[in-house]
Length: 156
Image (cartoon, rainbow, N blue to C red; front, side):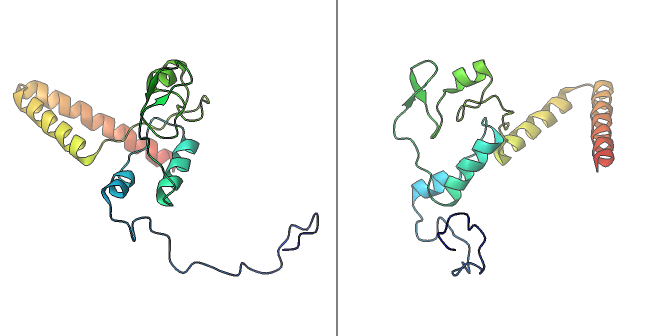
């Protein structure tokens, strides 16, 4: 690509192309790398989530060693890397804690263990209900599932 002003079109393909994808834990099997790879990113906007995922994927993520100072309340209570607002200030203002813009936040996803725990609690609750109430509840749940399927079918 020429450095001449206005020349933005390349006439050849890039010279070096990767044959294999980058793996951030290929030569580093440390505890810190495993912990960083297992981080669940939530309660930030979609754009910020993608940025943090990119940093984790390409080994650019640097976790915090000590809590940072919040821009909103000037308290040292930011415990997540790359955030500028604490969770309290961000939720009070209704903004993303990383970029401080009013965006829709990505909800926290439940882990498999949490999901199994909730399922067990639900089964125990259903066992304790009388038969009539149990069947009523199961019919209600079935109706909700059918409505979701119909909505998904109409959207596609």
